[in-house]
Image (cartoon, rainbow, N blue to C red; front, side, top):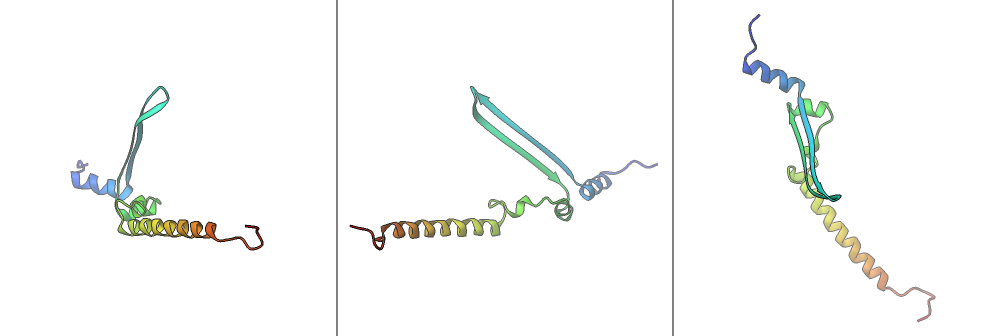
Length: 97
């Protein structure tokens, strides 16, 4: 039996996928000072999607579409806030002044 080459090993990893996940947090007297979240996925995009892993599609730092949706959502929230402010200033019918 011939030992696997690096290309064979890499192909196998990409085909099956490998995930490394970890969290580290540093706290002092119950106050969290530092939190590090590490998520490493080594797989083809197709394999990741097959596994239900697609966080890069909704992360605004990685996806232009997610960034656009985040900006659109912020603009809509501003409009709702402005409309609520205007609504609060309207007189209530039948109320005494």
